[in-house]
Image 1 (tube, one colour):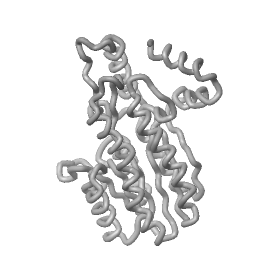
Image 2 (cartoon, rainbow, N blue to C red; image 1 turned 180 degrees about the horizontal axis):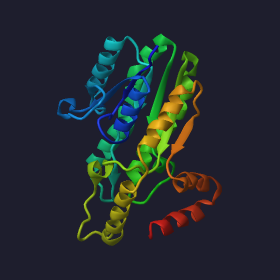
Image 3 (cartoon, rainbow, N blue to C red; image 1 turned 90 degrees about the vertical axis):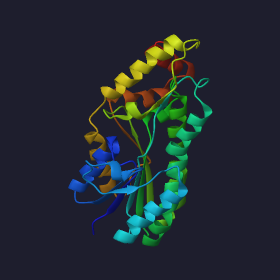
Length: 267
């Protein structure tokens, strides 16, 4: 039986690459977009979904289940970036980021669990970030929203094993996508005490994304996880040093690791 897969945020970037790759592997794949009618270059069918809207989430899930009769894999990929000094990021943007990166995935998981329980099988893959393993300067909100999703996944994984449902995290490093153009950037204020250093770091952050790995690596990694009947709790996909930074955080004293990060970001 062909597995039915739903990918949130499947119209661009990593989500689009994953969807197209999995479809070529023979899976039945649906992606989502807030405005699917505006997407003309998608190779996979797109369903309307705004992860900040519970009604939209339920309608999307129900639409896929009604058409296919089941839902085997949910890939929580929809997310947004955000940068800025914590002191200067508008609170409404902080709340929007958590609505998209954390509360949306939680609601989506809650919406698919009844069907997966009924099937006595299912797989949920949450796309987090290597940035979720550490507090990064000027990316405090992004790091914390992704880090929270990592821990939610760990907890949910243990709760639903009894129903034959698997849950796992995949933390990507920097990949060459258009996320930088869609990220919220707190403006570099002329009278800001962070003006010089934040302005420099903003350019560096965008360079890292533009020079990132090919998203096909993520797609191939996700495909391997789907084929694995007993996935790990965590996966990291990206450049060696980005993944190694997580190892260093575990073994180095806190202040030494902090100093290393500050030197890296020239703070």
